[in-house]
Length: 424
Image (tube, rainbow, N blue to C red; front, top):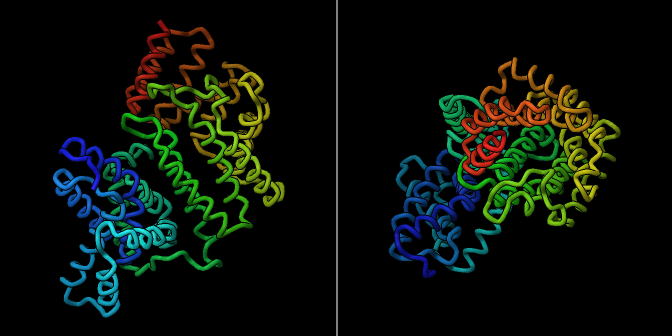
Protein backbone atom coordinates (compact mmCIF):
# COMPACT_ATOMS: atom_id res chain seq x y z
CA UNK A 1 0.00 0.00 0.00
CA UNK A 2 1.11 3.58 -0.57
CA UNK A 3 1.39 6.20 2.17
CA UNK A 4 -1.69 8.05 0.92
CA UNK A 5 -4.04 7.71 3.89
CA UNK A 6 -6.65 9.85 5.66
CA UNK A 7 -10.25 10.33 4.61
CA UNK A 8 -10.00 13.59 2.63
CA UNK A 9 -6.78 12.82 0.75
CA UNK A 10 -7.86 9.26 0.08
CA UNK A 11 -11.23 10.33 -1.25
CA UNK A 12 -9.44 12.63 -3.67
CA UNK A 13 -7.24 9.71 -4.71
CA UNK A 14 -10.30 7.49 -5.18
CA UNK A 15 -11.94 10.17 -7.32
CA UNK A 16 -8.83 10.49 -9.49
CA UNK A 17 -8.48 6.72 -9.88
CA UNK A 18 -12.16 6.41 -10.75
CA UNK A 19 -11.91 9.00 -13.51
CA UNK A 20 -9.04 7.11 -15.08
CA UNK A 21 -10.07 3.52 -14.45
CA UNK A 22 -13.89 3.41 -14.46
CA UNK A 23 -14.31 2.76 -18.19
CA UNK A 24 -11.70 -0.01 -18.17
CA UNK A 25 -13.22 -1.45 -15.04
CA UNK A 26 -16.72 -1.58 -16.54
CA UNK A 27 -15.34 -2.98 -19.79
CA UNK A 28 -13.45 -5.75 -17.99
CA UNK A 29 -16.46 -6.66 -15.87
CA UNK A 30 -18.76 -6.57 -18.89
CA UNK A 31 -16.40 -9.00 -20.58
CA UNK A 32 -16.75 -11.30 -17.58
CA UNK A 33 -20.50 -10.97 -17.01
CA UNK A 34 -21.69 -10.30 -20.60
CA UNK A 35 -24.01 -7.70 -19.07
CA UNK A 36 -23.19 -3.98 -19.23
CA UNK A 37 -25.76 -3.06 -16.58
CA UNK A 38 -24.49 -5.65 -14.12
CA UNK A 39 -20.92 -4.59 -14.87
CA UNK A 40 -21.74 -1.00 -13.92
CA UNK A 41 -23.33 -2.16 -10.66
CA UNK A 42 -20.28 -4.28 -9.81
CA UNK A 43 -17.95 -1.39 -10.62
CA UNK A 44 -19.92 0.85 -8.26
CA UNK A 45 -19.64 -1.80 -5.54
CA UNK A 46 -15.87 -1.87 -6.05
CA UNK A 47 -15.80 1.91 -5.77
CA UNK A 48 -17.72 1.77 -2.50
CA UNK A 49 -15.29 -0.83 -1.19
CA UNK A 50 -12.40 1.50 -2.03
CA UNK A 51 -14.08 4.38 -0.22
CA UNK A 52 -14.52 2.16 2.83
CA UNK A 53 -11.10 0.52 2.91
CA UNK A 54 -8.53 2.90 1.41
CA UNK A 55 -8.82 5.64 4.09
CA UNK A 56 -7.64 3.17 6.75
CA UNK A 57 -5.53 0.76 4.69
CA UNK A 58 -3.99 3.20 2.20
CA UNK A 59 -4.27 3.35 -1.58
CA UNK A 60 -2.96 0.13 -3.19
CA UNK A 61 0.04 0.28 -5.51
CA UNK A 62 -2.13 -0.73 -8.45
CA UNK A 63 -5.54 0.74 -7.66
CA UNK A 64 -7.01 -0.25 -11.04
CA UNK A 65 -6.12 -3.90 -10.46
CA UNK A 66 -7.47 -3.69 -6.92
CA UNK A 67 -10.82 -2.37 -8.15
CA UNK A 68 -10.98 -5.01 -10.87
CA UNK A 69 -10.20 -7.80 -8.41
CA UNK A 70 -12.95 -6.60 -6.06
CA UNK A 71 -15.39 -6.28 -8.94
CA UNK A 72 -14.64 -9.80 -10.12
CA UNK A 73 -15.06 -11.21 -6.63
CA UNK A 74 -18.43 -9.50 -6.38
CA UNK A 75 -19.33 -10.93 -9.79
CA UNK A 76 -18.45 -14.39 -8.57
CA UNK A 77 -20.58 -13.85 -5.45
CA UNK A 78 -23.44 -12.71 -7.67
CA UNK A 79 -23.12 -15.78 -9.84
CA UNK A 80 -23.21 -18.02 -6.81
CA UNK A 81 -26.31 -16.36 -5.43
CA UNK A 82 -28.21 -16.91 -8.62
CA UNK A 83 -29.83 -20.35 -8.45
CA UNK A 84 -30.35 -20.69 -12.17
CA UNK A 85 -26.82 -19.79 -13.21
CA UNK A 86 -25.67 -22.07 -16.00
CA UNK A 87 -22.49 -24.07 -16.20
CA UNK A 88 -20.67 -21.40 -18.20
CA UNK A 89 -20.98 -18.88 -15.42
CA UNK A 90 -19.90 -21.50 -12.90
CA UNK A 91 -16.78 -22.18 -14.95
CA UNK A 92 -16.06 -18.48 -15.24
CA UNK A 93 -16.43 -18.07 -11.49
CA UNK A 94 -14.10 -20.99 -10.81
CA UNK A 95 -11.52 -19.65 -13.23
CA UNK A 96 -11.54 -16.10 -11.93
CA UNK A 97 -11.61 -17.17 -8.28
CA UNK A 98 -8.16 -18.63 -8.74
CA UNK A 99 -6.92 -15.51 -10.48
CA UNK A 100 -8.34 -12.88 -8.12
CA UNK A 101 -5.98 -11.61 -5.43
CA UNK A 102 -5.10 -7.98 -4.65
CA UNK A 103 -1.75 -6.58 -5.79
CA UNK A 104 -0.29 -9.72 -7.30
CA UNK A 105 1.87 -8.50 -10.25
CA UNK A 106 0.90 -11.54 -12.31
CA UNK A 107 -2.77 -10.71 -11.81
CA UNK A 108 -2.17 -7.09 -12.75
CA UNK A 109 -0.49 -8.21 -15.98
CA UNK A 110 -3.40 -10.47 -16.85
CA UNK A 111 -5.90 -7.73 -16.11
CA UNK A 112 -3.95 -5.27 -18.21
CA UNK A 113 -4.00 -7.70 -21.14
CA UNK A 114 -7.77 -8.05 -20.78
CA UNK A 115 -8.25 -4.29 -20.71
CA UNK A 116 -6.84 -3.66 -24.17
CA UNK A 117 -9.59 -5.47 -26.03
CA UNK A 118 -12.35 -5.09 -23.47
CA UNK A 119 -12.76 -1.37 -24.06
CA UNK A 120 -13.07 -1.82 -27.79
CA UNK A 121 -15.56 -4.67 -27.27
CA UNK A 122 -17.54 -2.34 -25.05
CA UNK A 123 -17.61 0.37 -27.72
CA UNK A 124 -18.88 -2.06 -30.36
CA UNK A 125 -21.38 -3.57 -27.94
CA UNK A 126 -22.76 -0.16 -27.03
CA UNK A 127 -23.02 0.66 -30.74
CA UNK A 128 -25.00 -2.47 -31.64
CA UNK A 129 -27.68 -2.00 -34.36
CA UNK A 130 -30.45 -3.06 -31.95
CA UNK A 131 -30.02 0.34 -30.27
CA UNK A 132 -30.94 3.72 -31.69
CA UNK A 133 -28.10 6.10 -32.46
CA UNK A 134 -29.04 8.30 -29.50
CA UNK A 135 -29.12 5.32 -27.16
CA UNK A 136 -25.74 4.05 -28.39
CA UNK A 137 -24.01 7.35 -27.75
CA UNK A 138 -25.65 7.92 -24.37
CA UNK A 139 -24.76 4.43 -23.16
CA UNK A 140 -21.20 4.65 -24.40
CA UNK A 141 -20.64 8.03 -22.77
CA UNK A 142 -22.03 6.65 -19.52
CA UNK A 143 -19.88 3.55 -19.41
CA UNK A 144 -16.82 4.75 -21.32
CA UNK A 145 -16.46 8.28 -19.97
CA UNK A 146 -18.03 7.68 -16.61
CA UNK A 147 -20.10 10.81 -17.23
CA UNK A 148 -23.08 11.42 -15.01
CA UNK A 149 -26.57 11.68 -16.44
CA UNK A 150 -26.64 15.48 -15.90
CA UNK A 151 -23.28 15.84 -17.70
CA UNK A 152 -24.50 13.84 -20.71
CA UNK A 153 -27.76 15.79 -20.76
CA UNK A 154 -25.83 19.06 -20.85
CA UNK A 155 -23.57 17.79 -23.63
CA UNK A 156 -26.60 16.95 -25.79
CA UNK A 157 -28.72 19.90 -24.70
CA UNK A 158 -31.64 17.68 -23.67
CA UNK A 159 -33.44 17.15 -20.33
CA UNK A 160 -31.84 14.76 -17.82
CA UNK A 161 -34.83 12.34 -17.75
CA UNK A 162 -34.43 11.86 -21.50
CA UNK A 163 -30.84 10.69 -21.09
CA UNK A 164 -31.68 8.55 -18.06
CA UNK A 165 -34.42 6.77 -20.01
CA UNK A 166 -32.15 6.21 -23.00
CA UNK A 167 -29.47 4.59 -20.87
CA UNK A 168 -31.88 2.35 -18.97
CA UNK A 169 -33.64 1.22 -22.14
CA UNK A 170 -30.31 0.58 -23.86
CA UNK A 171 -29.12 -1.73 -21.09
CA UNK A 172 -32.43 -3.59 -21.04
CA UNK A 173 -32.39 -4.01 -24.81
CA UNK A 174 -28.84 -5.36 -24.88
CA UNK A 175 -29.71 -7.84 -22.12
CA UNK A 176 -33.04 -8.87 -23.67
CA UNK A 177 -31.51 -9.40 -27.11
CA UNK A 178 -28.57 -11.34 -25.72
CA UNK A 179 -26.10 -9.11 -27.56
CA UNK A 180 -22.64 -10.70 -27.33
CA UNK A 181 -19.86 -8.71 -25.75
CA UNK A 182 -17.45 -8.83 -28.67
CA UNK A 183 -15.88 -6.99 -31.55
CA UNK A 184 -18.09 -8.06 -34.47
CA UNK A 185 -16.67 -9.93 -37.46
CA UNK A 186 -15.21 -7.78 -40.23
CA UNK A 187 -18.30 -7.90 -42.45
CA UNK A 188 -20.49 -6.47 -39.65
CA UNK A 189 -18.18 -3.64 -38.60
CA UNK A 190 -19.01 -1.06 -41.33
CA UNK A 191 -22.65 -0.96 -40.20
CA UNK A 192 -21.56 0.14 -36.74
CA UNK A 193 -18.64 2.28 -37.79
CA UNK A 194 -20.39 5.66 -37.87
CA UNK A 195 -21.68 5.23 -34.30
CA UNK A 196 -18.34 3.92 -33.06
CA UNK A 197 -16.51 6.90 -34.56
CA UNK A 198 -19.06 9.26 -33.06
CA UNK A 199 -18.59 7.74 -29.63
CA UNK A 200 -14.80 7.87 -29.84
CA UNK A 201 -14.89 11.52 -30.91
CA UNK A 202 -17.35 12.42 -28.15
CA UNK A 203 -15.01 10.83 -25.62
CA UNK A 204 -12.17 12.91 -27.07
CA UNK A 205 -14.26 16.10 -27.01
CA UNK A 206 -15.19 15.59 -23.39
CA UNK A 207 -11.48 15.42 -22.62
CA UNK A 208 -10.63 18.37 -24.88
CA UNK A 209 -13.27 20.69 -23.42
CA UNK A 210 -14.83 19.27 -20.29
CA UNK A 211 -18.58 19.84 -20.04
CA UNK A 212 -18.44 20.57 -16.33
CA UNK A 213 -16.13 20.78 -13.37
CA UNK A 214 -13.13 22.88 -12.39
CA UNK A 215 -10.75 21.66 -15.09
CA UNK A 216 -11.10 22.67 -18.73
CA UNK A 217 -9.19 19.62 -19.96
CA UNK A 218 -9.37 15.92 -19.12
CA UNK A 219 -6.24 14.65 -20.92
CA UNK A 220 -6.79 11.03 -19.89
CA UNK A 221 -10.01 10.94 -21.95
CA UNK A 222 -8.23 12.41 -24.98
CA UNK A 223 -5.48 9.81 -24.68
CA UNK A 224 -8.02 6.98 -24.36
CA UNK A 225 -9.97 8.18 -27.39
CA UNK A 226 -6.81 8.36 -29.49
CA UNK A 227 -5.78 4.89 -28.37
CA UNK A 228 -9.19 3.50 -29.34
CA UNK A 229 -8.98 5.31 -32.66
CA UNK A 230 -5.58 3.82 -33.42
CA UNK A 231 -6.84 0.33 -32.54
CA UNK A 232 -9.77 0.90 -34.90
CA UNK A 233 -7.39 2.01 -37.64
CA UNK A 234 -5.58 -1.28 -37.25
CA UNK A 235 -8.85 -3.23 -37.43
CA UNK A 236 -10.23 -1.30 -40.41
CA UNK A 237 -7.21 0.03 -42.33
CA UNK A 238 -9.13 0.72 -45.55
CA UNK A 239 -11.76 2.97 -43.95
CA UNK A 240 -10.84 6.61 -44.69
CA UNK A 241 -12.97 8.09 -41.93
CA UNK A 242 -11.16 6.07 -39.26
CA UNK A 243 -7.87 7.63 -40.36
CA UNK A 244 -9.61 11.00 -40.68
CA UNK A 245 -10.82 10.83 -37.10
CA UNK A 246 -7.44 9.74 -35.73
CA UNK A 247 -5.77 12.56 -37.67
CA UNK A 248 -8.30 15.06 -36.34
CA UNK A 249 -7.76 13.98 -32.74
CA UNK A 250 -3.97 14.03 -33.05
CA UNK A 251 -3.93 17.49 -34.63
CA UNK A 252 -6.23 18.86 -31.95
CA UNK A 253 -4.37 17.09 -29.14
CA UNK A 254 -1.10 18.61 -30.37
CA UNK A 255 -2.30 21.92 -28.89
CA UNK A 256 -2.95 20.56 -25.39
CA UNK A 257 0.06 22.12 -23.65
CA UNK A 258 -0.75 25.53 -25.10
CA UNK A 259 -4.48 25.49 -24.31
CA UNK A 260 -4.15 26.47 -20.65
CA UNK A 261 -2.05 28.97 -18.74
CA UNK A 262 -0.02 27.94 -15.71
CA UNK A 263 -3.02 28.60 -13.44
CA UNK A 264 -5.36 26.49 -15.61
CA UNK A 265 -7.01 29.43 -17.36
CA UNK A 266 -8.06 28.53 -20.94
CA UNK A 267 -5.97 30.05 -23.74
CA UNK A 268 -7.91 30.48 -26.98
CA UNK A 269 -6.52 29.23 -30.29
CA UNK A 270 -5.39 32.57 -31.71
CA UNK A 271 -3.58 33.47 -28.46
CA UNK A 272 -1.70 30.18 -28.05
CA UNK A 273 2.10 29.86 -28.08
CA UNK A 274 2.47 27.55 -31.07
CA UNK A 275 5.98 26.70 -29.97
CA UNK A 276 4.29 24.56 -27.30
CA UNK A 277 2.32 22.50 -29.82
CA UNK A 278 3.41 18.87 -29.94
CA UNK A 279 5.12 18.51 -33.31
CA UNK A 280 5.16 14.71 -33.14
CA UNK A 281 1.36 14.69 -32.96
CA UNK A 282 1.22 17.29 -35.73
CA UNK A 283 3.31 15.07 -38.01
CA UNK A 284 1.25 12.01 -37.14
CA UNK A 285 -1.95 13.93 -37.78
CA UNK A 286 -0.81 15.26 -41.15
CA UNK A 287 0.31 11.78 -42.20
CA UNK A 288 -3.04 10.31 -41.15
CA UNK A 289 -4.87 13.05 -43.04
CA UNK A 290 -2.94 12.26 -46.23
CA UNK A 291 -3.94 8.61 -45.91
CA UNK A 292 -7.60 9.47 -45.26
CA UNK A 293 -7.72 11.78 -48.27
CA UNK A 294 -6.10 9.16 -50.48
CA UNK A 295 -8.58 6.48 -49.39
CA UNK A 296 -11.60 8.78 -49.72
CA UNK A 297 -11.20 9.09 -53.48
CA UNK A 298 -11.89 12.81 -53.55
CA UNK A 299 -15.07 12.59 -51.47
CA UNK A 300 -13.87 13.20 -47.90
CA UNK A 301 -16.18 12.49 -44.99
CA UNK A 302 -16.87 14.79 -42.03
CA UNK A 303 -13.89 13.69 -39.89
CA UNK A 304 -11.46 14.01 -42.78
CA UNK A 305 -12.81 17.48 -43.54
CA UNK A 306 -12.44 18.53 -39.91
CA UNK A 307 -8.90 17.14 -39.89
CA UNK A 308 -8.18 19.21 -43.01
CA UNK A 309 -9.40 22.30 -41.15
CA UNK A 310 -7.20 21.46 -38.15
CA UNK A 311 -4.28 20.96 -40.54
CA UNK A 312 -4.69 24.53 -41.81
CA UNK A 313 -3.82 25.71 -38.30
CA UNK A 314 -1.07 23.13 -37.78
CA UNK A 315 0.81 23.98 -40.98
CA UNK A 316 1.50 27.63 -40.13
CA UNK A 317 3.79 29.01 -37.45
CA UNK A 318 1.70 32.03 -36.44
CA UNK A 319 -2.02 32.75 -36.17
CA UNK A 320 -1.60 35.60 -38.66
CA UNK A 321 -0.54 33.16 -41.38
CA UNK A 322 -3.75 31.13 -41.16
CA UNK A 323 -5.50 30.56 -44.48
CA UNK A 324 -9.01 31.52 -43.37
CA UNK A 325 -10.37 31.51 -46.92
CA UNK A 326 -9.53 27.81 -47.21
CA UNK A 327 -10.96 27.07 -43.75
CA UNK A 328 -14.22 28.86 -44.63
CA UNK A 329 -14.39 26.88 -47.88
CA UNK A 330 -13.81 23.59 -46.03
CA UNK A 331 -16.57 24.45 -43.56
CA UNK A 332 -18.92 25.13 -46.46
CA UNK A 333 -18.24 21.59 -47.72
CA UNK A 334 -18.62 20.20 -44.20
CA UNK A 335 -22.02 21.88 -43.82
CA UNK A 336 -23.11 20.15 -47.02
CA UNK A 337 -21.71 16.73 -46.02
CA UNK A 338 -22.69 16.74 -42.35
CA UNK A 339 -25.05 19.63 -41.57
CA UNK A 340 -25.59 20.59 -37.94
CA UNK A 341 -26.14 23.82 -36.00
CA UNK A 342 -22.73 23.48 -34.33
CA UNK A 343 -20.94 23.08 -37.66
CA UNK A 344 -22.82 26.12 -38.96
CA UNK A 345 -21.70 28.10 -35.92
CA UNK A 346 -18.10 27.09 -36.57
CA UNK A 347 -18.51 28.12 -40.19
CA UNK A 348 -19.61 31.54 -38.99
CA UNK A 349 -16.35 31.91 -37.07
CA UNK A 350 -14.35 31.01 -40.18
CA UNK A 351 -16.39 33.43 -42.30
CA UNK A 352 -15.75 36.19 -39.79
CA UNK A 353 -12.00 35.66 -40.04
CA UNK A 354 -12.03 35.43 -43.82
CA UNK A 355 -14.62 38.08 -44.72
CA UNK A 356 -15.27 40.15 -41.59
CA UNK A 357 -17.74 40.04 -38.68
CA UNK A 358 -20.81 41.44 -40.46
CA UNK A 359 -21.60 38.47 -42.75
CA UNK A 360 -20.77 36.09 -39.90
CA UNK A 361 -23.20 37.87 -37.60
CA UNK A 362 -25.96 37.26 -40.15
CA UNK A 363 -25.23 33.52 -39.97
CA UNK A 364 -25.21 33.52 -36.17
CA UNK A 365 -28.42 35.53 -35.92
CA UNK A 366 -30.12 33.13 -38.32
CA UNK A 367 -28.97 30.24 -36.12
CA UNK A 368 -30.21 31.98 -32.98
CA UNK A 369 -33.60 32.48 -34.59
CA UNK A 370 -34.04 28.71 -34.97
CA UNK A 371 -33.69 28.17 -31.22
CA UNK A 372 -31.78 24.91 -31.74
CA UNK A 373 -28.74 26.14 -29.81
CA UNK A 374 -30.66 27.96 -27.10
CA UNK A 375 -28.76 26.19 -24.31
CA UNK A 376 -25.37 26.12 -26.05
CA UNK A 377 -23.02 28.64 -24.43
CA UNK A 378 -20.79 29.06 -27.48
CA UNK A 379 -23.61 30.63 -29.50
CA UNK A 380 -23.73 33.82 -27.40
CA UNK A 381 -19.95 33.64 -26.93
CA UNK A 382 -19.35 33.68 -30.68
CA UNK A 383 -21.96 36.38 -31.17
CA UNK A 384 -20.16 38.45 -28.53
CA UNK A 385 -16.85 38.12 -30.38
CA UNK A 386 -18.46 39.43 -33.54
CA UNK A 387 -20.14 42.30 -31.70
CA UNK A 388 -16.81 43.33 -30.14
CA UNK A 389 -15.24 43.46 -33.58
CA UNK A 390 -18.13 45.62 -34.75
CA UNK A 391 -17.61 48.00 -31.81
CA UNK A 392 -20.90 47.03 -30.13
CA UNK A 393 -19.31 46.40 -26.72
CA UNK A 394 -22.39 46.85 -24.52
CA UNK A 395 -24.29 44.18 -26.49
CA UNK A 396 -21.23 41.93 -26.40
CA UNK A 397 -21.05 42.17 -22.61
CA UNK A 398 -24.66 41.00 -22.31
CA UNK A 399 -23.96 38.05 -24.60
CA UNK A 400 -20.85 37.02 -22.66
CA UNK A 401 -22.67 37.21 -19.35
CA UNK A 402 -25.44 35.08 -20.83
CA UNK A 403 -22.88 32.55 -22.11
CA UNK A 404 -21.38 32.35 -18.61
CA UNK A 405 -24.74 31.30 -17.20
CA UNK A 406 -25.00 28.42 -19.70
CA UNK A 407 -21.62 26.74 -19.22
CA UNK A 408 -21.10 24.27 -16.37
CA UNK A 409 -17.32 24.47 -16.57
CA UNK A 410 -15.85 26.77 -13.93
CA UNK A 411 -12.73 27.67 -15.94
CA UNK A 412 -14.76 28.58 -18.98
CA UNK A 413 -17.26 30.59 -16.92
CA UNK A 414 -14.45 32.62 -15.34
CA UNK A 415 -12.97 33.38 -18.76
CA UNK A 416 -16.33 34.49 -20.16
CA UNK A 417 -16.96 36.78 -17.20
CA UNK A 418 -13.46 38.21 -17.53
CA UNK A 419 -14.11 39.01 -21.18
CA UNK A 420 -17.49 40.51 -20.28
CA UNK A 421 -15.84 42.82 -17.78
CA UNK A 422 -13.33 43.90 -20.43
CA UNK A 423 -16.20 45.12 -22.60
CA UNK A 424 -16.76 47.94 -20.11
